[in-house]
Every structure is written in structure tokens, then in C-alpha cells.
Length: 478
Image 1 (cartoon, helix red, strand yellow):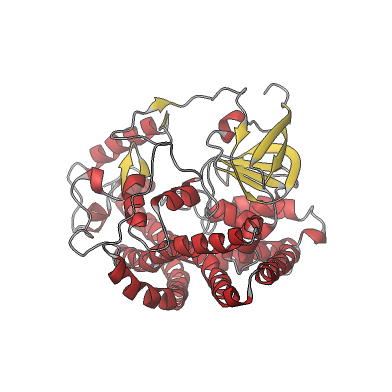
Image 2 (cartoon, helix red, strand yellow):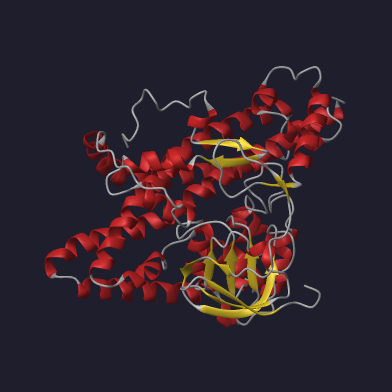
């Protein structure tokens, strides 16, 4: 987009000036650096970025706009804005075919083929990351301008409705799973289309649905208990009608001369909202190919006695895995890294920090403090809490309130069952917020401590507009 010059685009050696880094096994974003980039972007600001993506602007932090790169950005952005949707969809289609072919190939290939596929999957991951990142950069100013138009005619309350009712890979996934529950499709057919998803799917060592379909098999059993009125396609048609009605309401409130610009923003929103999930799905497909290849390579190494177990391969770096020869002390490296990972799993990090993070032992927050967040999907729901650490951690009963730290696409089908959701981390443009709006269930996000203050079995009432979570009754023994 021209926000950065080519001189500063390569990742610096100094960790403090990188966009992200790893602390105690967790990836952390450099918010201050992200704010600087947003302040250089026309139609965007550091404050807007932090509020939209992280829920709120930290006290004492203010935007410091810089227009030095504006001429270059103004030249590049229209071209990027026009070509990115087609570009990303083309890459997604190509990667989808590659995923389908590659996971079938890994079931019978030798280690040399697996290593070649691993390298190609990594290259493809980087290829799709470019348009996926461009979509994120372009969505910020687009949604900010739409918000200004709505506020000018006292229609800001329609923003969340306008974000819903669009094409969605998540809805396609739930519709496919619903078809399995109604015996219009088979589990094998579902896994052939959606098997790259799974619990903690951004973690390469996890098991995708393709490898372990147990979570979706349990979910299908739950869906079979639900009435036909819960069909996700019914909810989708309702969301589309609500969005179209909101668009008409906004246009009717605007003076005639401002309507063409508003139509342009609304049309662009309709195009760009689905792209965020399309890019993410393509990234996960490439990760699943790499996962399958790594297990083939790990199996070979374990059979030859180089590694003790097949999945020890996930404690190796990419450069180690693709090198002609592994380090001579590979077993010691694996043991060392596993011990550190086990230790890191016992630690919590603060939500934000300056300098080096100070880890602390995981502990519960005070139960007396209220649970509040951002209302990102309208509606009110009352039900029993179900806290899920990940999408394979347990079953969700119809109407329960899903409470989790964050979400990824493997959670999408749980949104069909849930009466509402409460999420620790995120903002209006986060994955969980987007899916909740498409499913038509209330969502409160960015509570920060909901998973620690709420317990499975608590009876709560959530308001997806006000961002409140009211505890009506504690679970016995909670």
C-alpha cells in the first residue's frame, strides 16, 4: 500500500521494532508499531485501529498522524482495493485444490515427497498471507468511513447489522454439518470439504478434523436433537434481509447527493467482510498440508530411531526439518524444547506490557468483579454457561452460553448450537464477532477475564448490544 518504504519493510533484527514476536511460547503483536502504521494510512488512525481490533484505546495513548506517505498510498490503494478480492479468491481456490490433492498424497507418499510438499505448503502460506494482510489493512479505513456516514445521520446503531448477512465460509461449514445431521450428506463428504479445520487449528501439532473427527461427530449428535427451525440457512436468510433493510434505512436518511458514496461503501463492505474469513481458511489449509507432511516425516524419523515419537517432529524448526541432516543432538533438543513448552503452559501473560513480559502463574480473578466487554452482535440471551478452553474440550448443549478465550473457525459450528457467546479477547472485527453476527446470536467480546470469572453451569444473561454479562445464579459448587 505504500505505508512503509522498501528500506524499512524487511523485519529488523531488534525485537522491539518488529511487528510481532514470541514471549514464553505466545505470539504478541507490537501494538505501538501497528498504531504508527495506521497513523500513516489515509482514512485510518492508531486510535481507530486499537479500538476496532483490540476493543479499546489504552489510557494516555493518542494518534500522531503522519501524511508523509499519503501521495504514494493514494496511488497504490485504489489499485490494491480493486484487485485484492479477485486475487485472494483465486489464491484460495488454488490452495483448496492443493490441500485436497496433498492430504490424499500424504496417505501414501514417501518421506522425500512429504518434505517437498511441506516446502510448497510453506511457500503457499506466505503467498496467501499477502492478500490476507491487504484485506485487513483495507478494511480498517473502509469501516471507519462507513461508521462516519452512519453517525452523520444518527444511524450508528445499524453498524453491527450492516456487518452481518454476507457470504461466509463459516456459514457454509455449519450448513454442511447440518446436512450431515439431517442425513443429506455423509461425514466422509464433510471431512473431504472441511477436514482442514479442527481444535486449535492454528497450532500445527494439533489434530485437524481430517485426522480426528470426534469433535464434529459429537456435534452432529447434538444437532440431531435440534428442530428444523435451527437450520443455519434460515438464519442466513434472516441476516441478509436485516442487512438489506438496514442499507435501505441508511440510504433513505442521507441527502440525495451523499447516497452514491454511501452505496459505494456498502457495496465494498459486502465484498470485503467475507474476505477476512476466506484468507484465514486458506492459511489453515496450507497449515494442514504442512501438518500432514510433518507427521509423515516424523513417522519416518521415529521408525529409524532418530526421534523417540512421531510427534516429536513438531519440536523441530522449519530449517531443521528441511535440512539435509538433522542436528546430532536432536533428541536432546526435543527434550529441552518440550520441557520449556510444558513450563510455559503453566504461565499467564498480562494482556499488554512494555518491554519484556513478566509471566505469572495462572490464577483466577476475583469472582466479585463484574464481567463486561464490547457488544458486537445484538440481542439478549439467557442460559447456562459452558466454558470451553478449545473446540474439542467438551460438548455444548442447545441454548447454552459459550464462554471462551478466543475463537478460530473450528468454533463456527458451536455458534449454531449456542444461545450466545462471551469471548475474552477481540473486537468488532474479530473472528468470533463476525461469526456471531452471521449466526444471529448475541456476543460480548473483549471481557478479558470471562473464562476465569464464569464457570460451567452458571446462569447468565448477556446483552450483545450493551456488552454486559449479568450473573443470575452461580453453579452449585462454583
